[in-house]
Image 1 (spheres, rainbow, N blue to C red):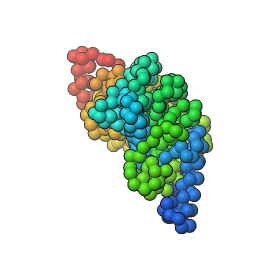
Image 2: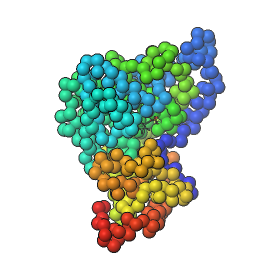
Image 3: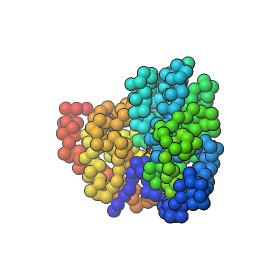
Image 4: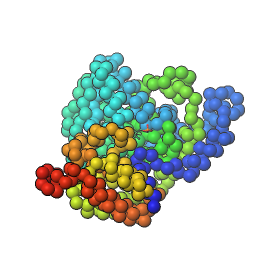
Length: 395
Ligand SMILES: *Cc1c(COP(=O)(O)O)cnc(C)c1O
């Protein structure tokens, strides 16, 4: 059996989005910047897609900039707010310890350029510590950046409250909503966001396309210089088929969102209940305030990589944390931030479902994952030490 359970890394394209992609590439071949008919027809599709996407997140069309994906959108928001802040002598940015690397590495660069970066801690369930966050915001702060939902452990942050705090303090607020858009309802006005990043391939659209919402009046500088596309804020001929397909994918995602959420939550709960029967295991992230499809675990006494390879042989596509950190031997910064010690953090497994997953697939996972954990443990020197008492169990 083949089970694709890595939807937080990237989800399969929705058939309707693929159809839009193909027909747009075929029929709207003109360059939207061209004055001839073919160009203007393409321009119309571009602007219609922008209006539709804006509408689905409570924004106005002119507040949407198309980008190459979530990473670029995050980077542009952060560097724009930082440049604006620096001009006014405000060089402090407040964020959290569990952000995606698209945010954390952008902040690293700003740190090397003299910015003060404060990362608020999270509690053991992965929810940001609000008093630490609020206390860190002062008169030198130019930006607060907090993700809406975490890509590794699925926790949903109190972003609405954070947005309200930022608004009352007059500080710009960015939220990385890449895991949230298309999965929970998102309204930029309710969130009080000045910037919001989204990415199509996390909700059934194509890879390599995303959008940045920028509230009217919020500072925005281009990362890419060139032509006047996207009101001069993002040069380069627009990826029209991808943009149109993104609009279709978002529409499809939101059409049956409640139904899909109920179905996926039920599958996830069955999966969590079953896998927590594995001895010395734990769920990562908040049991309630989490994305419907996210099931993240730590199993003591194993290496996550070995587990992934074993599962891959059994037809299961899973992840050990974020796709971006696999290949490196450092444990996930998110798991460390929720208080997992190194050894435990190494034994992580992330299974992310969507409405394409079936009950039969969950049954299969409930059979093969415990087998895989037992097998990997039988080869593990750490597990042997735990068994004979040379080390003590943490989970
Ligand atoms: C995937 C992801 C990104 C990066 O998006 P890309 O479109 O792959 O560049 C950023 N933030 C979060 C939370 C993500 O899950």
